[in-house]
Structures are given as structure tokens and as C-alpha cells.
Length: 330
Ligand SMILES: C[S@@+](CC[C@H](N)C(=O)[O-])C[C@H]1O[C@@H](n2cnc3c(N)ncnc32)[C@H](O)[C@@H]1O
Image (cartoon, rainbow, N blue to C red):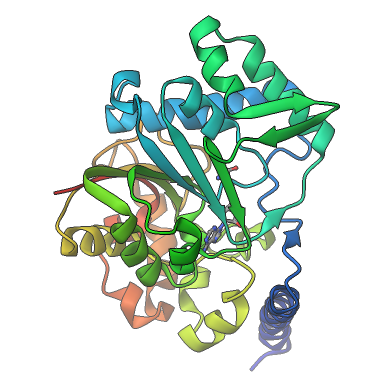
């Protein structure tokens, strides 16, 4: 082995060791019941305009890609997985007519209460009389703080969705939503089984899932598929408690939801090999339109080193870097 190769190996090993260490720290914190983490804090560093626009985009995407309208939400109960540091999407759903929204997060992402108060106030200021009345039934904005009314918005943290039975207490929901959360759920199989129990017949799952490596290696210039070469045992040590990606691919979600009898539809939101989103999200991608030989060469370079479970996938399947799932329980 040349000196250069040895150094590269060492750097990879160091990166992996760093992720394992971070996971151990997360495990110790969770075991001690310390749920405040500096992750999932999407709005930290956002301007007020950016926060409001982010909440609008998340809400609009749920409505647009599911085809549901405000009338469909009227009186319905919604479960949001992994809301992060802000419950603005839940408030928008309530303002649109949802009866209640339960938000479950495995941790409490750190937040600036005053900034959050400002975001909620800005969301409220735009509403018409009916919507504002519903909004006010769900949150009290006072003294720079937001206090949620539990019968309208129930915020539960420190609970993994797969273990939510006690927190959900036999409730069932019409719609289950998430954005940028399912890829962080370590035991996603048990989580989807649990969510299936909480969803009413005819109800909808609507989830946006980012299948990329979240910068774990790409931030340092690695091939975007490099994380799919790390053995499962090592990956578990790196990710089990800290919420780093579970590496499930698009085909996993399709098989899982279809296996549970759902009418499953997914659109592609991103490619593994390119920056930026595919807008509007597409059902299919095509060579010459969405990707080209350059994207395929990125796969070719690494395909021999991919784990068997990923190597078996077609190029087009591997290229999918994000999906928007709409699945109806039949
Ligand atoms: C990247 S953040 C996204 C937050 C928010 N949805 C947004 O779009 O800004 C992912 C969120 O999912 C939560 N999460 C991850 N795994 C979870 C699990 N197993 N159960 C419940 N929440 C989870 C995280 O704690 C975090 O708040």
C-alpha cells in the first residue's frame, strides 16, 4: 500500500471513529434522560422571513403532492413525526381546520423561545378572522413565549415514534406527516409498523425523505455513495442513537408500504449526484433529461465497493436521493 493510500485509509478511519464517538455521547445523554440536542433546530440562524417561508413550503408541499385540500383537513387529526424546533406547520394545519395535531420527537431540539414567538406571531398576523380564531385555540402567545393548548396541539418529546404507544394512548389519526425525519429513524421498520397502527383506514401518510448522506462524507468531498460502502455493523455503531441516516433507499419504502397494503405513490425530489431539488418532484427520472453519463460514472466508480444490498440496485434506483411519499391506507 502506498503512503498516500495509507493516509487516505487513516482519514476514513478517523471520520468513522468520530461518528462512533458522537453516537456514544448521544446514547449516554438519552440514557440520562437529557433530551435537549443541538440537532433538528432548523430555524436557528433563519431570518423571520426565511422561517415563515420554510413553514409555508412544508405545508404547501403536503397539500400539493397529496392532493388534499382544506376541506379534507376539516375536523381531522394529524400526527407529525419529528417537527424539530418549531410547530408552525402544526399551527397552519389547525388554522386550516384540523381538529388536533400531535407532534412527536425523540429529542427536544434546542431553540430560541423569543425567535419562536416571533415566528408564531408572524404566522398569526397574516390570518383572516376564522383562521385566526382556530390558531388562537391552539397556542397562547404571551410574554415572548408560546404555550400550546394540549387538546389542539400536543407536543411530545423524548419519545421515539416506534415506542409511541403510551404517548399516543390508543388515539388514531387521519394523516401522518413528516419532513426530513424518516431517514433519521434508526429502526424505521418498527416505526412504520407503529405508525400503521395509529393511522385510520383511508388515512394518508405524507413524508418527505432525504436519502443522501447528510454531509457525513460528502462534506469532505467523498463520493455521494461512499456511505453505502460502510458495513452494517459499523454503520449501526455510528448512527443508532444520534439520528444520522438509516441508509434506506427508495425501494425499501415502496416495498414496506405496499407490503402493509397501502396505495403507494412516491415522487423523486433529489438526485444523489446533484445539488438542488427536482421541482416539481417527478414520478420518474430519465437519462438525458434529469441525469447523464457523468452521474452514471459517479456510480460506476464506486459500484464494486457498495454493500451487496445496494449493489443489487439499478443505476436509476441508486440515483434517487430523495422522495416524497403519499401512501393511503386501504
Ligand atoms: C432534520 S430534523 C427535521 C425537523 C423538521 N421536520 C424540519 O423540517 O425542519 C429531523 C427531526 O426528526 C426527529 N426524529 C428523528 N428520529 C426520530 C424518531 N425515531 N422518532 C421521532 N422523531 C425523530 C429529530 O429529532 C428531528 O427533530
